[in-house]
Image (cartoon, rainbow, N blue to C red):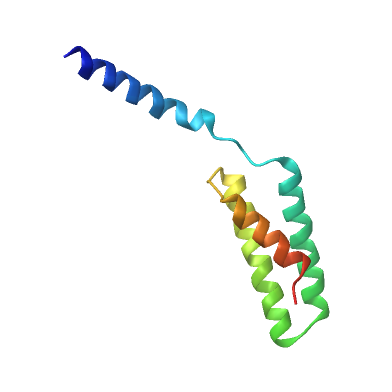
Length: 91
């Protein structure tokens, strides 16, 4: 009975502490995503056709990442790196 109580309390403590241990993304990464979004928007306004659609798609991906970050949903850091890399080299 004591083992069951100890295990249950440990599991509850870890479950309640998990959200507190989550690390939010750093502000420079969020600002880099915002800059990339505006850069892609400007480039998309200067192009037409297929390349414009690729730029708009990348901008939409970045916008979804920013929305997820603002809402506090978890975002994979590799997705952020990939989005920033694709914004730096759009073609």
